[in-house]
Length: 143
Image (cartoon, rainbow, N blue to C red; front, side):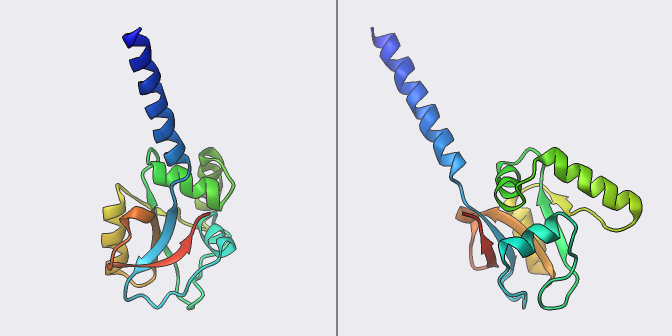
């Protein structure tokens, strides 16, 4: 009887953890001193699917992606572009092959995104909302 209760409790905790993951917010950020203004969902999506390469401040965007296996990346693309990872990969392969674009640079973590955006004013990336600190400026927040 106790074993069954422990299994139910463990299963409930796993479900709770997964439901919190499903609602994790991801934010698009630039360095705290960047003059990049806030961005709309359409602007962010355009940048990350290669249909736009210019920021509202007129600068050329340098984009950062987190690793393919990261939860932040999965959340970001699902909420912002409404495209699957394979669709995004296919789009960037086509743009790269045709010479029309270069995919976002992949970095390992939110900490790496924050470090990179702080070093370059037109670099943007995305991180978990919980990772936001004074080193970054939030440009867009997912739903």
